[in-house]
Image 1: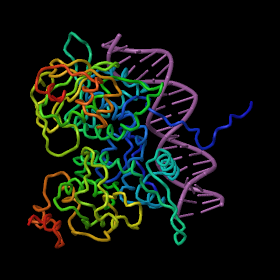
Image 2: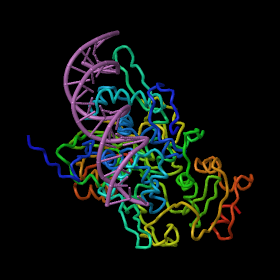
Image 3: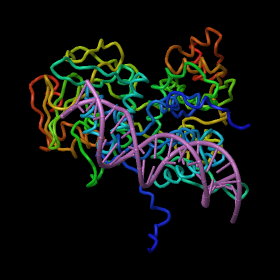
Length: 246
Length: 246
DNA sequence: CGGCATCCGTGACGATACTG
DNA sequence: CAGTATCGTCACGGATGCCG
């Protein structure tokens, strides 16, 4: 009798690795196809179902719905109905879900060398460059919001928010985080990047994707790129001054 | 109707996310089921096919073979034939594959809170506790090899090896590297943990799994555990002294 | 119109059996 | 020991339909 008889039908029995191991437990939650990419999208802020479907080309509608349900059940995300004017609902990450930022950052750093060529079949979204750039802006002396302009679009990041997995370096909540309903209790705190322009930016950068990736890989500093004319930094606050290398 | 001749070894076009994004590129390589757990196993040093199959309960033989082939092709691992005495071959990580340590570490840290209960179906291996412990031993002032004794078995880690996603710091190889891998003469790259006892240990710790996990979660320091009698540290070198909190 | 649910073809997965 | 072969099952991807 090699196999234990399962009660057959339970909740859609999710496939587990059944290992008493922290990594395996993580992969039980976020190891399914598309899940981490949905997290990447939601790290940019609340998103509607249709937005997610548009920014995740290739995912089928039922898989997206199923993943969102799994993520809700696993405590990674919540679904919130928007006030009457807009008869829609948005998904957003919980604190636990936002805690995946170091995982995404580590994956982005490891995968950066594989981004040498852009294949013709590759989709692109501007905010996908936020994660690599976060690393380059992680150690700034003057934290603040940076708005980034690429040919592919705009996004904004919060410099100095502490994206990597290092201990300590608690994020400073508050600042401009008014739009985010969060008490800022944990280390990662609030939304660290977002799509589109920022409500209030301390610095504005214009560059192209290639330079942006080089910054993320650490091959280049922003000050060097500005010196070469490959990047432009606008702003008069201390963060902008620091980024220009003045 | 002429049969379509498949190029044999390379037809199965791998399913890609087709996104110009570092994270998506990473997941193209390591996002498949079991891949990251195979990396976790190989981070402990070279392993034979049968060893991998034994320590990854639930993986089917063909999937394991397929993943190893993929990993070889993606430059994550290599296969090496052992000298005549042992008519076997082992798999080991390349430098690129070892670069996944920060990813595994971030996953382990995020998954640590999910390790509260051990389900009856969970398999356990001693060296699975190495990743959580690495984080607790990452910042020691005196680097060295720590041998850990649990009820579930023994393993060893290299304290101060830099497991987290810190910037750069890629290979500070050298030091005392040769003694770590179980057959010693593997490429010495930088195996940061391994199964079984260490050839030369600077400190020996005895504790149980629960305390080990609490250390990894940062809820407890090793010195505190020693003070409570929940851990024992043996050794007279500077590392052992530091770990005891003396 | 946004947010899914249903159906279907294909491929990936898991278990077992078999072979060099 | 180290895989390959086979097969049943399930998950995935694509298209369409329903419903508030």
